[in-house]
Amino acid sequence: MTRSVIAKRLSRRRRYVKGNGQRPTGGRRPPLARALAQLRRIKQRFARYIGKTYGHLAADCATCPTPCCADAQFVNVHIVRLEAKAMLATLQHSPKYGPAKVREVLARAADAIARYGLTETGDTFGQTYACPLFEPGVGCLVHWKAKPAACIQHGCYERWEDLPETGTQRRVERQVAALDAAVHGAPSTWLPIPLWLLRAADEADESLDFRDEAEPPPRVQTAREGFASLD
Ligand code: SF4
Ligand code: SF4
Image 1 (cartoon, helix red, strand yellow):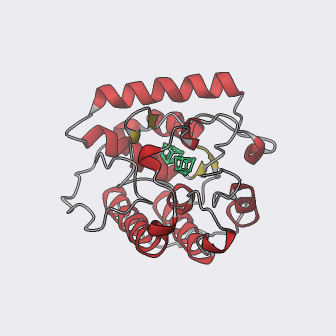
Image 2 (cartoon, helix red, strand yellow):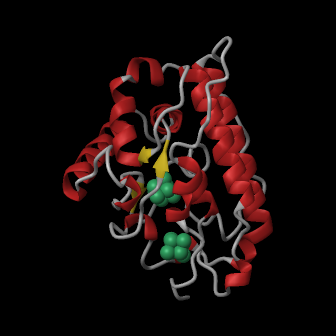
């Protein structure tokens, strides 16, 4: 499997995710817990769609010798504030992980910011980093509950014609941005994952204060969803 054919055409995202014109919806803000649950449903619905439609065409990430998530020259995934809160809450409330893993991930995020010179200004999409949510031999720590849409979309394919269409990813990211704006009263800036993780951790008392809803695991575990499902 070559990596020349890939679906993570992240640089294109800047056209619609940065300064994307999303407006706060006004009115009453949804409580954080409800927003996080809704965010999770949006992501999981998208993951099921990608898995069922394209999973059989993509390389198996579980056996990949060079996982892209650890490639500091490659990852430039951006998220919004609500997504960072979802990631921290997922780890915090995971029966396998909990607060110790949150601290570990935050330490890796701080290290990534320093090591790769990540900043909130300038051409943030030009910045790349090894993702602090990736663990060798394990995969993405927030695989099923809080993975960014760009990561769900991404995969390695032999043929360009097998790549997933991008319209659904754009729709999902618009939904994520709208939900984020609604819960916070204003849209937040799309930033590299490590930056938002640390900022969200500063709001930890609020961000981690929600009850996790019991949800069944995905019924279809495709090759595309090859990273170990941890949460
Ligand atoms: S998408 Fe999967 S197969 Fe492709 S480089 Fe990343 S981990 Fe490897
Ligand atoms: S959030 Fe998960 S899938 Fe996305 S780059 Fe990080 S480890 Fe990889």
